[in-house]
Each structure stands twice: as C-alpha cells, then as structure tokens.
Amino acid sequence: MTGRPIIVWFRDDLRLSDHPALHAAAAGCAPVICLYVLDEQSAPSGPPAARPLGGAARWWLAQSLRALGADVRSAGAALTLRKGAAADVIAGMAGEVDAQAVFWNEIAQAPHLAVADRVAAALEKIDVSSERFPGDLLAAPTAIRNKENRALRVFTPFWKRVQALGDPPKPLPAPNKLAGIAGVASDTVENWQLEPTRPDWAGGLRETWKPGEQAAQARLKTFLDGIKGYATDRDRPDREGTSRLSPHLRFGEISPRQVWHAARFAAAEHPRLAADIDKFLSELGWREFCRHLLFDVPDLATRNLQPNFDDFPWKQDGRALRAWQRGQTGYPIVDAGMRELWHSGVMHNRVRMVVASFLVKHLLIDWRAGEAWFWDTLVDADAGSNPANWQWVAGCGADAAPYFRVFNPILQGEKFDPEGDYVRRWVPELAGLPNKLIHQPWQATPLELAAAGVELGKTYPPIIDHKAGRERALKAYAVIRAR
Ligand code: FAD
Image 1: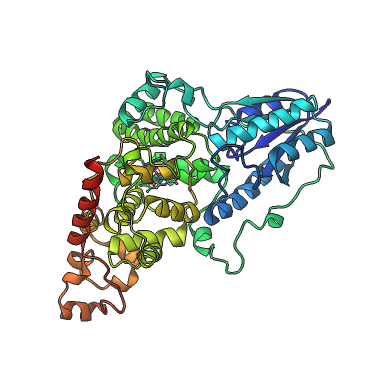
Image 2: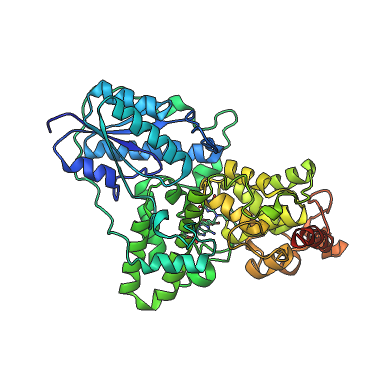
C-alpha cells in the first residue's frame, strides 16, 4: 500500500462489515487508520449538549472496543484510541500522519451532526478532505417528511413510507485486508476507565452479554433460526422470545440493513415465517421512528413533545423513586423488571412499559426521572428510543398511549408471566408462593404467606394501592385533557 493514509473515524458503528466509510477507504491503495475518539467535551453551541454515556453503556463500549480492536488486528491494521474534543483530535492526527482524507459514517442526530460539522471545518482549515457516508438507518430522516416538512408522528404511516422505499442497499462485506501504518500512538481501553472497579458492579453484565460484531452476527443468526412464534412470544418476559439485539444495534456492531436483509432472506426461504418476520422488522421500524423523531427534536430527552404536559403536576417523591429504582415497590412484576435491569443492564420490552407506566401514572413521578435512570443502567440506552418510549408511555410523546391507559401491574403480570417464572427468577423471596398469588402476594392468607416464607412488610414491601394509584393518575391527567 502506498500514499498518504486515510483515517476512518468510528463512532456508533463498531463493526467492519457494512461499514460504508471503511469500505470506501479500504477500496483504494492508501493505508487506513481506524480511529475511535472518546469525546466527552464537544458540547455543540446549541442545545442539547452531547450526553455523557451512562454506566452500563460505558461498560459495553469498553468491551465493544476490545472486540473491534481484535477484528481490526486480524484484518492487518490497528485500532487507534484517542481522547478529547473530536475536531481537535482528528485534525491533530490528520496533521501528524499526513492524512489525505478522513471518512466516517453519518449519524443523523443533533449532537453528532454538529460535532461532525466541526470536524469537517477543522480538516478543511488544514486542507484535508472529509467524506461522510450513510450507514446508521434504513432511510434518511430527510426522506420521510409530512406536508409541513416534519418527521411523521404516527408510527403506522411512517413504517408504510419506509417500506414503500423498497429494500435498503445490500450490506457491504468487511474488507478482506486492511493495511495500516506503524508507529501511531494510541490510548488503551483500560486508560479510559470505562468499567466500574470500586465496586465492580458489572458481574451481571459479564454473565449476560457478549459485546462485539461477531457476537452480534451470531445472535442474529440464532434468533432468525428460532424466530417462529416471535409475534406472540415477544410479549412474554418469561421466555427468550426476542432477539436481544438492541445493545448491538445501539453501538452499531450490526447495522439495521444487515438485520433487514437477513430477515428478508429468512422470509424468502421459509414463507411460513413471514408474519413473525414482518413483526420483527416492524420493531426495527420503531427504532427508526424514534431516531427520525430525534433528528427533528434534538431535546427529546427533556422536552414534552406535547406542550400541554408542561405544567403537569408531577410529584417530588424521592422515597418512591428510590423504591422503584431498587425494585422494592411491592409490585412483583415491577420489582422483577427493575432488578433484572440492575443486574443485567436490560429489561424485557413488555416489562419496560409496565415499570414506566407505574412510575409515571401510579407514582406520578416525572418521566424524565425514569428516563435518566434507564439511561444510566441500560446497556442499550439510546438517545432516540429511550426518551421516545418514555414519552410514549407517559402520554406526551409521538403516537402516544392514550392518557387513560394505565398498565395494571397485576393483570400484566398474570397475562404475560402466567406461571410467575419471571418474577421467581428476579424476586426470589416470593418464589415459594403459588402461581395464583405470585403477582399479588397481599391476597395470600397468613397461612399461605407463612408456607412460602414471606413476611409482607419485612421480607417483601407493599407500597401503593393500585386502585388509588389509577384514580390519582386519572385525576391528574384529566387536568391535561381539559387544556
Ligand atoms: P426485539 O423485539 O428483538 O426487537 C428488535 C429490535 O427492534 C430491537 O433490538 C430494537 O432495536 C428495536 N425495537 C424493538 N422495540 C422497540 C421500541 N419500542 N422502540 C424502539 N426500538 C425498538 N430500546 C433501545 O434500544 N434503547 C432504549 O434506550 C430503550 N428504552 C426504552 C424505554 C422504555 C420505557 C420502553 C417502553 C422501551 C424502550 N426501548 C429501548 C425499546 C425496547 O424495549 C427495546 O428495544 C427491546 O426491549 C430490545 O429487546 P430486543 O432487542 O430483544 O427486541
């Protein structure tokens, strides 16, 4: 390989396959420098400031960078790690290695776009060209607009429009070989202290996950091989019915178009799976919907999409918030979900809806407090999907659940965890209760409680009466409706 090198700037696209920027760089005869910048300081001039990663996502990032580093090394080059404001680091490095160009995949989100503009401007000043490639979405946010040139706010027409665009481009292969250059200084993942040490609370994450591109591809394959029944099983937290691809997608270890094409291929091979596969792809559509929304509403994590919620009478209740965060609310399905989250950095989608509804509609705590907790504890914490879903549950978002829909944690538990397996796994102190009582231990007789070794108020806490909670929520929400 000859000539001045090309730098490929990696961000939320920690993979080698279907990486348009890397593919273009590797296609020429120039050496390639793969660069990741830990940028904790580039706050764009307007809101929102770049959002620091939460604890669980930092852990994931560390593992994902190690996996990417190993894959880049196997291809013949090295992954360079640097820390600082992206524009300074990248322009500095371009000067240092006499780069001819810097390539990256565009991330169509406000902080990323603003930071990328700064990088391009800094490079222009030193006469280094830059090129951006699409790679993060099935369709560009600018391709799907309503008559007022805004992102669509209702999912079904949005998804129809995405599908009407036809198949996205076929995924690109990983480069067979990468030629790097020697002697480029790099930080190490360990220097960055992304992982918890004192205390090391990441044991559950290590037990649960294998980050990295190869693991993501393997997970997709295993999931598609067993996708039969997804359309119904996806709502069951007691079953392994969903793909568990969300953190891999979040960090770009796999691209949405790789998922799309693999799923379409499976549907063509096995037409009887078409309904399950369509449902799965429409979930991928929700990710897309949330990101398009974020493109239009950069402050999605702080601003109610529906302004009539701005004066909502949220309650300040630190005690109740802490009980919710720790899985000590007295509602088994809620506690199971919150403990699963704390242990493994993830929570089943159905249970996310239940716990979010419980926080917002029973405890009347501002959805932003729940969103912030999820942001810190989820390995898949996503700048679009997290706030968009919280707003959806609270009723102030796009295509939002109607204000009167209050998820009943008992009925939800009985319907979606009928044998109580999910609750028994995460709330073991209730394990001895029979199935019919596991979602409402307060209905058990003293004898039944004693037989199960449960002492309500001692070994397991009660918190708030569901009926009172629902009525209180409806009253507060009626104020909104009257506006
Ligand atoms: P699957 O059922 O296999 O779905 C496939 C993919 O589709 C997922 O990996 C994900 O990328 C996407 N997807 C599925 N459901 C949704 C959805 N409702 N919204 C957006 N994308 C979706 N998802 C995140 O990726 N990050 C978040 O921070 C996040 N926060 C959430 C907060 C709340 C309050 C709620 C109710 C949902 C949230 N979700 C979030 C959506 C959803 O719960 C997860 O994407 C899903 O549980 C991931 O599991 P899976 O990969 O097995 O999903």
